[in-house]
Structure formats: structure tokens, C-alpha cells
Amino acid sequence: MKKSMAGALVLGLLWAGSAAAMNHSFIVGTFATPSDVTKTCLECHEDASAQMMKTTHWTWESEQIIDGKKVKRGKKNVLNNFCIAVKSNEPRCTSCHVGYGWKDDSFDFTDETKVDCLVCHDTTGTYKKPPTGAGMPDPKLDLTNIAKNVGVPERDDCLTCHANGGGGNNVKHGDIDTSLINPTAEIDFHMGTDSLDFSCQECHVTTDHQIPGSSLIVSPNNTNQVTCEQCHDNAPHAESLLNQHAASVACQTCHIPTFAKEHATKMTWDWSASEKDTKVEKEHGHKVFIPMKGRFTYEQNVTPEYRWYNGSAGAYTLGEKIDPSKVTALNYPLGSIADNKAKIMPFKVHRGKQIYDAGNNYFITPKVWGPKGDPIAYWQNFQAKGSEEAWKVAAAAGMEANGLEFSGEIGFAPTETYWAINHMVAKADEALDCLDCHGDSGRLDWAALGYKGDPLTTPGAARK
Image (tube, rainbow, N blue to C red; front, side, top):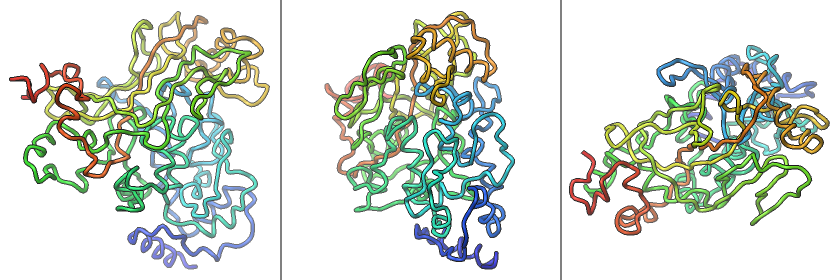
């Protein structure tokens, strides 16, 4: 196939929004390495790798402004309260990278042949990456057949990684899980196969492989966001009183009454509970205690927590001092009742208890993952050495990888992270009613939001 013909075919299918496989039957032979697949793709799609390498799907970081300072921040160097940090844990964490072989700092981010085309463009449903393979595909795959059947990304391409972040289905986000692959309108009205049947790209409109949308933990500035106003104006209701609410209340607040509708989501993770010589515990089909990871809680049909949000967030940075007696927010939405740009927004708040340096009073980035028999990684080492000694060994290795001093003293401190709720939009007749927020049993904590009382019943309490 001539390059011009291939380009025209791709462009035509993208404009049509087709999820069908494109005709790549001209691909023959076998591929010795996954990079050979990419080389074949680049014969027709010359700019594809170069475009992808400019995205955060590839770099795992971007320039952010935190506390007035420009910093590089992203999955690569952020601290979270799930598996904590990427550096020193790369083969496990980078299994969802859109590249091949990011196992340590030697990975070449300039090598175009390391871009994984198939992970996003597979239409066979067979492509997969082992969970500790540093982004390499399963060696048993028929790469030729998959390459012959690539096409516009489908929901399961996106959700293979985004629904399973944190080690399992719906662990992290709460509103992004595998139920969105083929959801009903009850799960998500926009994506429901019995309603609008939107693809991910319907809202995440993609140009040159740049996909808008990001989580507040990795991108506090949220400069590349997706908004409801892309399709809906600021006064979408027939009732003027509802339109007045739109100045102070995000669309998601009323139109996503609950999240984790079908699959429960992890709400707490206590790393301090990890200990050897104990057994895994399960409740309602979920592991709520794993010896090497600690204790968890899961919830389903979760009512969000509500905060003012002006589109940006603050965040904890590595090496920042903490007060271990207080909860440290590793990220947090910015805005207040006095901020005219802020609206009340729904969030999942994940609460953790994680390791910190008791001598330096900052959080530790431990090396938790390692291959079987690894004498340094916590998950391989804690049974032999006991939790405290294993934590110290893992902490020393992880802190060295991140360029931070380790005092040798450890403790555990409470944290929280905020995950904006944008998916699992309810049908219009299932949106919140007045008394869901106002009145004696309303779900909003008016005092915490800065009001003098319920603005419906308290004179002078309305936002100015």
C-alpha cells in the first residue's frame, strides 16, 4: 500500500469515528521483536511515534506550576497513596506504559521504535502486557495477526490500563472501570450501548495523538482538561433556577449521584498493617488484607465528597516536610466559596497510611516490587526479615533512586488523594433533586463548604 493511500484510509476512518479494524492484510511474515512491529507501522505512519513521544502517555510528566514554581511532574515522579512511587519499581509500574522495556533509568525516551502502537490500536481483544514486564507484550502473542487488525482505539484499549490502575479493576479512579467497556445507560448515559453509545474519543477529542484529560494527582494544573461545556452550554436547563445553580455547582455534582456503580472501588489503604506469617483476608469478593500490602476497604455505589474546585489543584512534592500527626493531602482541589471561578465538584477521596522518614519528616518512596528472591524489594523481603527491617532496606533503595536522603528511621502517617468524578453520568431523571442536597437530610456539608448554613433555608447564606 502506498503511503498516501494509507494516510487517506486512516484519516477517513478517524473522521468517521469508526472502531472497525483497518485493512492491513498486506502485512506478512513474523516479527522478531515488538519494535519490529513499530518499524512496520512507521513505514506508512511516519509521524506517529514522533507525535506520541510528545504526549504524557509517553513522557509520564509535564511542566506544572506548584506553589508558584515550575516543576516537572507526572506518573514518573509523583507520590501517591496506592503503590507509592514509580522509581525503583519500574518493571511493575511501567507495565502500562505505551512503550517497550522501561525497566530502569536507562530507558531511551528518544527511540521511536520503542513506541507501542498495538496497545492502543488492537481490535482483536487479544493484546496484553504482563503485569511485571516493563511494558513488553506477552511473548506468546501473535503480533502479526494483531498488526493486521489494528484500528481506531476502542473502549477496551483505553480501559485495559485506565480501569486497572493501582493493580485491579476500579482500584484508583472509582468512576473508571471495566463496566464502561459495554455499559448500559444505568452505568453511564453517555457511553451506554442502549443510549448514546459514545466512544472515549467523543469527549477526549484526539489530535496528533494528544489526548485531553488527566488526573489531579499527576497533573494538578489540569491544563488539558475535558469539560461538559464542550457539548453543553452554561444554561442547559429549561428551569432558570437550575441554570442559576450552574454558576456555583459543577454539572457532575448533580448528574453523577454515585460512582463505583457495578464494581467496588478501593477507599482506604493502610500500609502499616503489613506483617508476615498471616493469611489473605477477603470480604464480598475483595481482598481486604494482603500480608505484603496491608489492609484495605472497598465501597460500591459511593456517594462522592464535595469540594470547591476552580480547575487547578495543589500537590505534595517529594522531600516536602510533613506533620505526621496530621493528614497530608498529596493533592487537593483549589477553590473556595469566595473564588468566583470555583464550583462545587464531586470527588473520590482515597485515604492511606504510608511510610515516612521519621528523622527527616518527609514521605518515603520505597522499593516495594522486585523479582522473586529480590533481597531489597519489600514485597519479596518482608517475610524473611520482618516488616520493620524490610521496610528500612526498601526505603534506602527507593530513596536513593529518587535522590532523597534516608535517615534510617521510619514511621507511618495518614494521607489522602482526590480523584475528580467525571464518568458514570446518570440519566436525567436520576440526577439529584433539590432535597438531595438541601433540607434536613441533604448530602452537602454546607459549613465545610464555607456557607453559614443551608442557603435554601438560611437568610444571607447564599454565595455572593
